[in-house]
View (cartoon, rainbow, N blue to C red):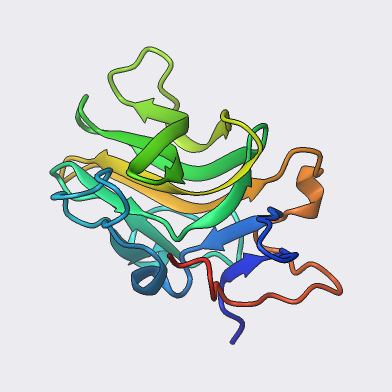
Length: 201
């Protein structure tokens, strides 16, 4: 079965080159996500994986069967490391039906650098926010910084026991690339999908 982390990239010498990165939570979650990069998720519990067949939520795509969800306490998980550029876009597909004003999802994009990391993007959906969006929603951020760099995203949030809070998938679209060239649940014709050797850290 095709590993559900897809990356289209090229490396020339030691120059970082970014391209479409897309991840669904169908496979590889515990291999490619952790809470050790920097201090973003240190000391917080992991988000847990789930299946749409076990909850009263219909996924947006028939190929999507899995998601992650936080605990009733503040939870955090960090993604694998990948190349990203200033001006690029990160989309995160979420679903929220809150029963508590503290239910929330917070996504941060981090630039990795010596001695720590720098936040280069953020997107938030909180039940207590007047701009809160219930149901299916795509959180979108445009990355700041300069040039192309290695980075990762951290996924933070919490939910009450009776709430539904989940993340279905995310993608990174480099500046200048059309979103149609980075579809989450569509195979890209003529493209190889290597694993993340060299990008895990």
